[in-house]
Every structure is written in C-alpha cells, then in structure tokens.
Image 1 (cartoon, rainbow, N blue to C red):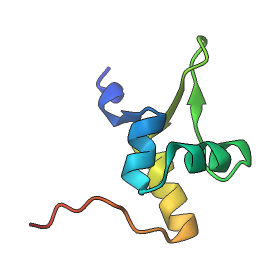
Image 2: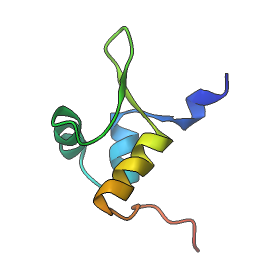
Image 3: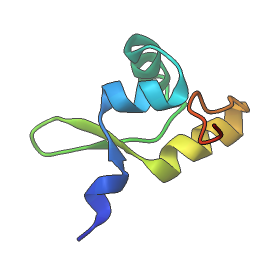
Image 4: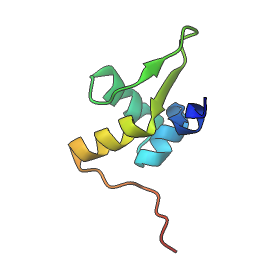
Length: 67
C-alpha cells in the first residue's frame, strides 16, 4: 500500500504540530491525540490523526506551504 507516506513517527509528528516530542507524548498518554502502535511497540500517527488533533485544539500547523 501507499499508506506509509502518511504516517509520522513521534519526532516528525511533533515537528508537524510545532510542539516538542515530550509534549506530544503527554498528549498521547492523556488520550488527546489518536495514534497507532506497531506489534514491536513503535508509535506512529496518521496525517488524519494530526489534523483531527489540530481541529480539536485549534492549533495552527507549524509548517506553511506559502512562500
């Protein structure tokens, strides 16, 4: 499948949201953001989960495609 391009690890998801990895872990552990955990224990986030989190908290994205 082509779904892997839409998956973010903890560091890249934190960067996308403009927060530290530690803050993102706190959001995850308190249930504020959806995530996936692989059988090996790796945590990942889909783009949809990141966007849903942004919409629920009204946190604007840290990245910008505008030049």
